[in-house]
Image (tube, rainbow, N blue to C red; front, side, top):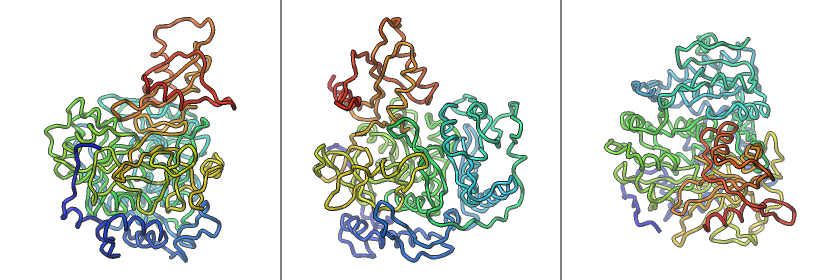
Amino acid sequence: MNNYVWHPSQSVIEKSNIYGMMQKHQFRNYTDFWLWSVTNRADFWEETIAHLDIKLAQNFTSVLDVSDGVERPVWLKDAQLNIVDSCFKSKPESTAIIYQEERGKLIKVTQQELENLVNKIANSLRKSGLKPGDAIAIDMPMTLEAVAIYLAGIKAGNPIVTIADSFTPNEIEVRLKIANPKLIFTQDYLLRAGKTLPLYAKVCEANAPKAVIIKATNQAIDLRLGDIYWADFLVEDTDFESVKQSPEDVITILFSSGTTGAPKAIPWHHTTPIKAASDAYYHHDIHKNDVVCWPTNLGWMMGPWLVFAALINKATIGLYYGAPLDANFGKFVQEAQVTMLGVIPSIVKHWKNSRCMEGLNWDNIRCFSSTGEVSNPTEMTYLMQLANGKPVIEYCGGTEIGGGYVTSTVVQDNYPSTFSTQALGTAFVLLDDDNKASKKGEVFMIPPTMGLSNTLLNRDHHKEYYKGTPKYKGQLLRRHGDAMQQLENGYYKAQGRTDDAMNLGGIKVSSIQIEGVINTLDFVKESAAIAVSPKDGGPSLLVVYYVDIENAIVDTDRLKQAQTVVRKQLNPLFKVSDLVKIDALPRTASNKVMRRKLRADYEMK
């Protein structure tokens, strides 16, 4: 157990959103509340929907229908809605977004201004010939325009294909081919940490459809035939009635790496944001007029999560147009009066090593949150102290969950790098290698819960999540792939992945994808990529084992070659920490590579 602990004061507890629900039902403690939320799921979600003030054009006949089984639940049966309507419930003059360009001034955008921009974009989509159901893509940084385009597409009934701006042209093209959008929004260049990086050029190289380009610089670019600038796309009409749809209609297509190479295309529906907003309401304790900042991108689930978590809870989105790696970002957090700051552990490690955030006033922060990687207790303790001892809500979930399955609260003691609870309305069990319930093992979800995916665009959903899974107390289980350990005090600690996926700098990628590009090197016969946990905890390290091609030319810069090909073909943020030569990869009787054995062997060094 960690030495440092944050104890919630009675004042913090009584002001929390969780406490209000506990008082209503006269729960004696938080554990009773969580147990009620998973044994009375329909009641929990119906009350949560009421607390979140979700706008319905037509009411549901039942919150939850599992007549076709928990694998295919129907949420909000017979309802009609557009989830974007639930993002505009505050007063017109309230602040919806507060943003700042690198070394720029703080700019506030009111809810009315954001809604006007959203409606302009929605009308522009119609003028461009797009009909409800036609997908559009976004490949750009998290800016005011990106958020507005995202909301406008959903409001107009156009599913949004989200692509991270750090991806290579190869990775962009793969995602475009899977989702087949008819229009893509992008920027001419990315401005980050003083660098000007081409973005439109990458989109063109990826053979993208017609593009709408937002200018971030004054540099001239040559447009492809048919591509247009933002100013020429946008119309001035600010009146637009949202397209009402079924709760099961697709609003977003996100991508998450599976274990067979190509990324999984995961649809989000109108109910998925309710899960995100619920986690924000209860576990992150977000209130009206709070300022929520999480450096992210719409290409990762935390981008859409941030939009819905803030706006549905009548809070403000805090956006910094740059890398969160120096004091300029810290000053933005200070001046924007951020109340909830989200991070990935890699960022905190950089802050601790560089000490760049010290001396700032982060007293407005009520809590942090951390996700994407296994965190380090020392670094999380350091983070807590940057805001004079505020808790870190550890948050672990997935794109196919719409939020978290294990997390923390502000009504329980907070220990760095541990999760205090299974998420409200969500349940899981840990199973060992013999499929027995255990204090340490693989995470299996106990469906149903709002937010869980029901379909995949390019995979067999049943095969991916349910085929061959064991049952627990007669209940069908859903595969997830994380490994967890339950500690003596009932809290949980992350143990990485049990499958062939890994998190690198908060980005999920499969071993197969890494190996595919490593195997193109002229000295590699075959390879196996693994994620290794550092001895002191914290973000995983990428280690690649390889078998040498016979008579290959000896090159002392092989690690550098591996690093270059991974960054060029997959993601410039990935780092190969070690390249290990091996005579033969260990395999099972069915010829599968035993990556778990390689991981165990490496961690024993």
